[in-house]
Image (cartoon, rainbow, N blue to C red; front, side, top):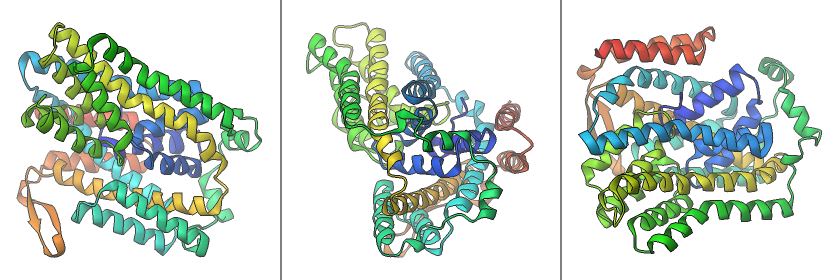
Length: 433
């Protein structure tokens, strides 16, 4: 329920809760999992929470973690979609989560600083993070391209000059990290059998999850026909789950083009309204696709009740979007864990994590621009540079105070994340009332 603020905000929440507060996993294992999930198609935050659940408790843990990560957002978006088609846009929702946005800004900045201190240990990694942030902010470089390039640079350096990327922790640094979580010894002893790679198990897992993913879509196509709106919705979002890298924003570009321009299921205004609802509700931002699937089927029910079609559209869209995450994690995670000791791979994933730090920095700048200021203007410079600059006179004093207060509370380590978010939400609601 705390997963506001897009993928970086959700990753920040997970990092603080799992690594800092509960010490379920070490920093190294968390970052290793994050690097792998960043390279996968689809929502990396959903994949990361599934990976972490799998690492801690096997397939059962991954299923529970991934499903509960999606469930609050599904319920919220479904309710808001029903209100939207009944009464129009619900602008009050943005006001309810005003305080949470300010707190998430502070959380993202804190996570960027904390992860940066752990990862950016060489000038090369600092340069990679800075280049990634600058490329995405000033030239809108695609996230997937940035990540792939960073991984390739890390792979080459891992073979030629590993010291440029990898720094073994000193005894003092290890002591500062605190006691090693018990799971590390459990995995290293070989007792955690679910983390051991097996070709037979990987093949069976892939077959089972391919059936889980595509079975409902095939059933819809057989019952309603290949040209039915529900079938087309399922096909579109199944494709999006496999070809869109870089998280929710990469998916949104493809979905907006297909749903608005090609299919005509939604108007541009409706698409923006759906993004606004997804931005202000718990759960992954990619769940805006559920809104699209609901409206597409509701508007073109083709022989079904609009409400039945809309409900089926929301469920089918959510299923084909998130089921592949379980396929990627349960099939590939054991092999990723087994390869943690390969120097070249460690260097590549460390470079990817540095690029992710740059992405978090770019997100922090974007969030600050749109949370702390009411207006921003575009500015274009040489060499294709194009950025949004906030207007200083439009600063929102309440948002600034809430963000600073949340940042101080988080930095003190004496106030829990749940308390900070609850207080920020309450203050934001009172300020808007």
